Image (cartoon, rainbow, N blue to C red; front, side, top):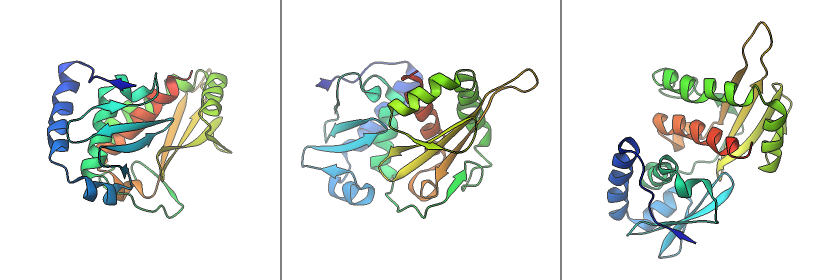
Length: 207
């Protein structure tokens, strides 16, 4: 079912509108070849975690199954637009990296820590059983790390590992997010921050 572009706050609306304008001028064949997104002449198809989205070009609109996360979330739609405009599908080499280990990670570590690590720790570290159930519902791969750890595809070929440790009387809950090594070539550092934030939000919607 087609969804009209939702109206959100000014902070989200302005960048979203900017990328919609850039999207209109996109070369769709070049974007499809660069990102691996299917383009059928009318729309791109991209899978974000648990739902397939059709992004129509050149006049932007988005379609997906009812209730799909990005339909009502402008940052998620902006992330998909930015991937089509600037992202690159790069094969993963099989290793995972912390945010800090990737290029420009040190520069962006403060917003990443606040928006992603601290948020994940206090969202999931106090609800480990619900976190496990949410990740199982998403079809995530269970990992032998943390009090609960799972691997999940953000976009096809781009995998993230979300590890959570419960707090106790002496220590607060904590979390770590690892990125498949192709994130450093496929995304700008600010998009890697958004990727972590979006993953947390989508998992949270399953709690």
